[in-house]
Amino acid sequence: MSLKGDVIKRLVGIKCPKCNEDIDFLKNYQSGEMYYMFSVESNGMGDYDGQEFQPDDKGNDYECPHCAETLFTDEDKALKFLKGEISGC
Ligand SMILES: [Zn+2]
Image (tube, rainbow, N blue to C red; front, side, top):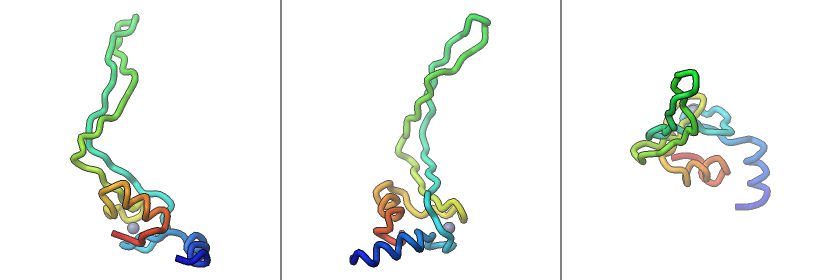
């Protein structure tokens, strides 16, 4: 890939292969569980603290923010796409 090609790609931007809109990020949906420390406060109310996400590896979708199509299901490809190294799935 030539340097000139890189510059042009960056000026044009990354386009969604499904709807052809410009993309500078993908929406990532992961399946898993949110973990909180649940305790009781001095006023008697419950308190949720220290949230942490624990993925269960069942779902990991990278979607176009415009048309909501799932473009990738792994981070490596999604990253390459956003860097302009690959054009689609
Ligand atoms: Zn799209």
